[in-house]
Every structure is written in structure tokens, then in C-alpha cells.
Length: 131
Image 1 (tube, helix red, strand yellow):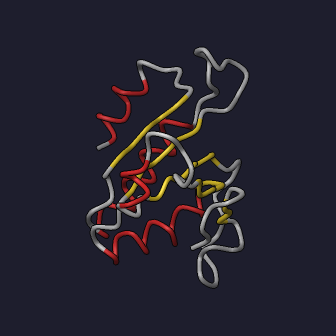
Image 2 (cartoon, one colour; image 1 turned 45 degrees about the horizontal axis):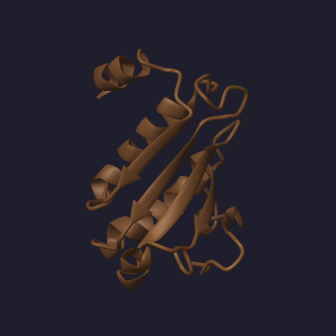
């Protein structure tokens, strides 16, 4: 909802947007990504002043179609990097549950959809699994 996004943006600037367990229906993936993009559209200005804001999503695959849609659509708006929970103290449960941690950084301009939608822009941090 545009009014909701505007209300949240009124409290900006944001350095970080965090989401967990927010991908559960394919029809909601694009609105979720567009909302995240709108929230990241402004320069940061809080504690991380001077750095572009970013979003971290922690996901456990609940709906395979929605999860696949997110991985297909996200690179249109964001530079996407997958991080791993492996070998992180205190995150053993996340690793056991096959949770995925995605870092989303807003692109200057949205990419055009083409091919598989990934365009080679989905990256994995060192030691992370590639999907």
C-alpha cells in the first residue's frame, strides 16, 4: 500500500531494513520487493551515514514457488548476495533449518527481465552455497 510505505518513509533515513520469514506467497513477492526498494531509495543517514542503506532477509523455504519467485525477481531491483550461517556461533539452528540469508542492495536502475532473470547477479559470499 502506497500510503503505508509513505508513512514508514516519513521516519527515515534508514541504514538497514531487516526481514525474517516474509516470503510465503508468490503473489506477494513483487510487492514485498517493491516495498523494500522504496524504503532503500533514500541515502542512509543514521549511524551508517554516507553508506547506501541495505536489506537483510533471513528466509526458510516455506513455499517453493514463492522462494523461487523471490530469487528470480530480486536481481531486477537489487544486487543480491547470499551469506551463510555455517560456522557462525549462535546460528546453529538457522543452519540446521536450511535458512538463507540474503543481502539486498538497491540497483541504481532496475534491470530488464531477461533469460532466467538472474543475469549472473546473484552472488554468494565466500563459503556460502550458491543457488
